[in-house]
Length: 160
Image (tube, rainbow, N blue to C red; front, side, top):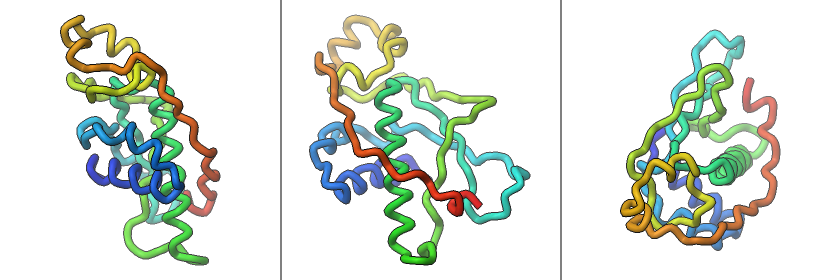
């Protein structure tokens, strides 16, 4: 899945959920600001067309921001499955993206997005920026409210 597709999904699900108020948060993001992923290794005992993908974290993202995006991803999976009724819709399913518990990876993004709220950024990542860079970023000196409804759990049959 491309970074562009991931960002598109996240914007689409906010529209479906009627949470356009959060679109302002994603408005200035570009595909390069998204986390990446890599396929999990085969041989995990599942016989399925659905593969798990390990998230490659974007270092600039705070834990609260990451959790917000993960919720959007789970909502997207839920709505994608509903499109097909009692059988999953055709085509490639959305990727099931999880954190790699044994070997988490990160992308050191030298340029994070500008103009987000301060709690969107990872404090350690910001700590490596010069005062000039921080000023140019135009960080909003307030905390963003990441409130989203809790997504339904990913059904077990989605992982089979």
